[in-house]
Length: 159
Image (cartoon, rainbow, N blue to C red; front, side, top):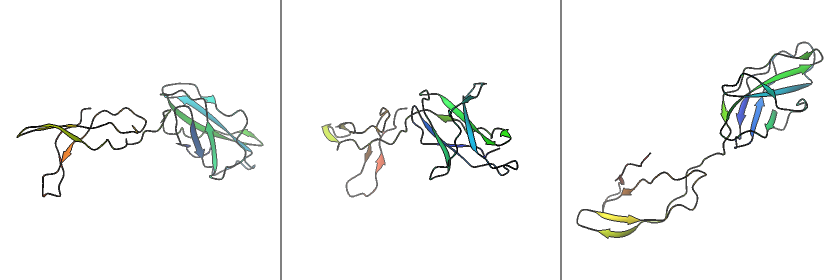
């Protein structure tokens, strides 16, 4: 069978599945590959491609799987085809979640002092322009004492 597929370039509705050809072609050239998927916890595998994958792309053997359901974890497996028929399936891929990638947010605006006492200061700032694709859960505030090069965390972010 082909080697265990790898999943990359995940979005909420698609994933790129790539694989290596089998070490043994069964005595006949490999003419194509079938790709199957299943939801994690599911029993049944369903075919992904309408026609066999026959030509390697620039990067190797891969197939962009479309029409996935956001928030669902999938596994994939591959079967090679030669003149004798369809070979055994590969080991399933590691589970992959159909979700858009998330990145760290951009910086908030420069904090402004809104109020101060002998022992405290109240700050205000604007949220970052870019949230990285996920709601911002909180902020980490650091302070630097005058004449020091060290920054100290003054709060714990809320989870």
